[in-house]
Amino acid sequence: MFFQNTSRRGFLFIVGASVSWGTVGVANQFLYGVGATNALSLTFLRLAIATPLFFLAGWMVLGRRFLRIKGRDLGMMMLMGSMIALSQACYVAAIALAGVSVSTLIAICASPVLIALLSVLIGRERLTPMTLAALMAALGGTSLLVVPHASGGGGAGGTASLPGVLLAFLSAGGYAGFIFCGRWLTGGYHPLQVSAVSFGTGALLLLVCALSTRLVLVYAVGGWLVLLYLGCVPTALGYGLFQAGVRSLSATLASIVTMCEPLTAAILAWVLFHEELGLLGLLGAGCLLAAMAIIMLVPRKYL
Image 1 (cartoon, helix red, strand yellow):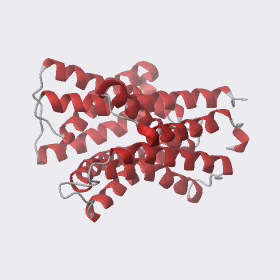
Image 2 (tube, one colour):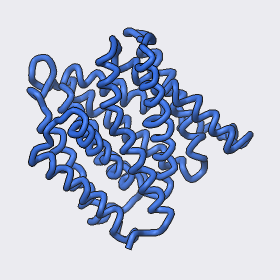
Image 3 (spheres, rainbow, N blue to C red):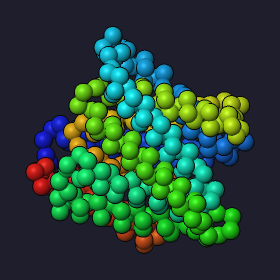
Image 4 (cartoon, one colour):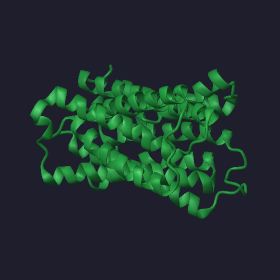
């Protein structure tokens, strides 16, 4: 039987967030196709659009309570923003050095492993056999979905460089830290408080990074509509759902559920761009669905 209602709601919130994140690649592909831009500019604009939405929603929902944040916890939220900015910036840099497939595989698969380690070593969580089985199924499924799309496996030279691999691991570490710290704060603060401060900090840091390279702010009307979608849905709504959902799931389980993102991206690529999933892709999708089924159907006391 599906576990208690709060956990079910949290699971569905994180699935919704992950599905929305899976649309980012398609949206970015459209933006690259209609004009000159770069990844740092797109990432900064996503956060810049989402941040005022978090502040507005937080004030509407919480009123003056929205501003009641302890100094130490404010620092933790700002650290989360630094981590998400680090994750995004390192991922962009890793792609240039190690290629899309290798960078994506490391960034997506290393994060839940790091979160599980942090949860066991620092959070004193118990890693049960069923949670471990779900983690292994999700990692295997993601690998089967991502690896077949490799084109040469690396950057310009066709091989993944060590600096690129290290940057991809840094990206995974930043994202793992973001999720772990967010889970640490959820008991004392509303998700909108956490998201507003962390994404505001991340947007400022990404602005500095983008200005140091080339910040692109000129887009056609269609491009701005897609940017608004990216800021409002995968970023504001997606991360809002994630922060709400992680309140009732462990950080490890939440990180496993977020691996619905590559499954969504693969399905969209198949439907919209007629990319072949192939036998390995279908097997990977099956493994990811099996991981979700374990989390959804196994009683909470065994997870």
